[in-house]
Length: 419
Image (tube, rainbow, N blue to C red; front, top):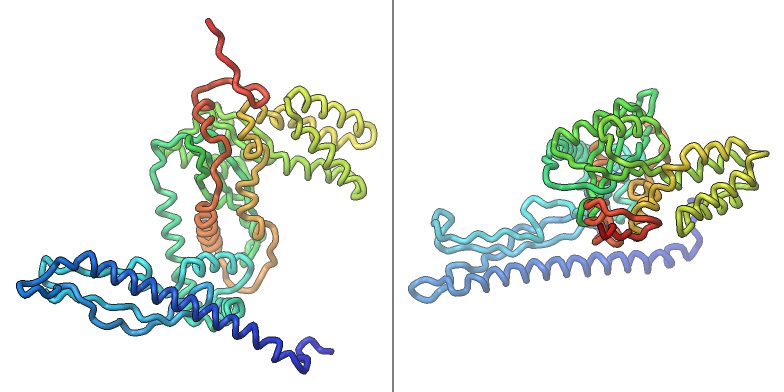
């Protein structure tokens, strides 16, 4: 049976879903309308004592503003915002003005929709296809998202990124850094895929923050140096931070030149994948388990022994795999010199990887005149949105001990000599 051909009772099966969608939209509309009414009532109550000589209120209700539609995740919601008037007139210095915090005057889309636009763009949806794409997602025509609107949003986000790149970084210390290069080939006509260099940091209070997004040429030393030098010029204080990244040589060369006091920790997720690639498919699961035995060890000594065992098992038949592991052995085990509570955060570049999990390296080239600047602006907005949901480091209280230079062995702080 053709996919397009519906079963006889298909329409009856679809009807409950349509009714449910309508109920959800109507419920959302009533909640929004009720919130607006409560907001206005609260404003009037705060100015209830503001009366004229005859005891009449100066600040009063004055009908509603014209109905408008707000695009939300539940679809377009028609709402009428209550209007407030001060009888003294706008020219009076004592006149009170009401400004809704829930529904600003020019809001046409909820924040969730603005966060969805970058994802769709990076997935290959052209600016002219947003109405159709969002219409399919929300059961509406999404009339407020024309190609011109999306283009204006992109320009606005590019300007926000430029301003963000000039912000002052003085006053905050960063104890941990995560670095990775994110590749994009969507909507770009260049031969080489666009590589965005992303750097995150953990502050002294354990909060993860986005430090920089740079449009680089692959993951070259020059590109990483430009990013790190730019951060230092704006007051970036790394001290002797621990940097976590994959085996890309460009970052580590730049780090040693620009931040020579920083320590290095290789990402175990990347290293595991690289080691597995040296084995036939049938052995990869077993090899992965053997590698996990190394970084799951309770002490550095036990991890060293697990490394020796791995080499003994596979050196004869798979020397490349052993060499891949051994060449970074020292910097793979640096995390043992830091609080054990922080280990889950330090062994991988997961804070960056998880943010781009559904975008990174999963694109197809599409038609259209995309640009590197537009891609950069979209990624910036995505990370800004994700940053609000990043979790604080476990055991963040011990960060101050790391900043003080206290010594940790196998995750446990060592007592200072009595002398």
